[in-house]
Length: 194
Image 1 (cartoon, rainbow, N blue to C red):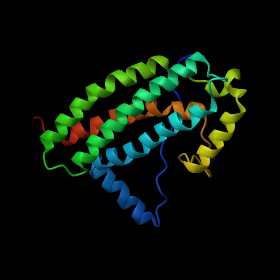
Image 2: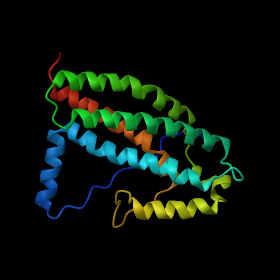
Image 3: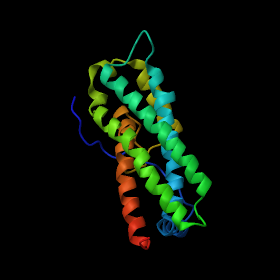
Image 4: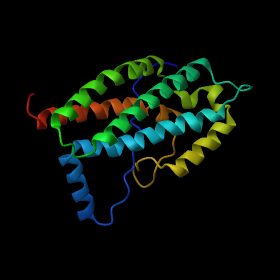
């Protein structure tokens, strides 16, 4: 297996009742990047929790995951704990903070706190998990992934929502890094220095 950039996992928004409501909601997210960060962070932390609490349950002491996958589970657990703490801090500050300086300080502090867990995760990250025979042979995994796909649908790509795969789930932190980079750029463009 080799490290590579996975396809983006993602988040499905609740369907809008009308096109006007959908456009209005999209404009609000663009106007308030912090609100978008909080909303998407809630979903992201929940998805990471599914990996740790449900998907990892496909293995047990008598059927231990391959070492590479075990390292990924351990690294994603650290990412989950860190992002869960970040989410709590975001909830405390709220989507409309009274102090822009306080928000700036929080985000700058968290850039440093997120760096180490994500760096470690990237060092353990592999793609091609869904075709790797030690993983394909795990019948319980396919049942768990089917249940997760029913409980937490992925974004629709075409007519229907694709099912979750191990590669898609483990690609979430990589996709989240892209999201943070875009959000950070948006924040820099919309704020004044200092």
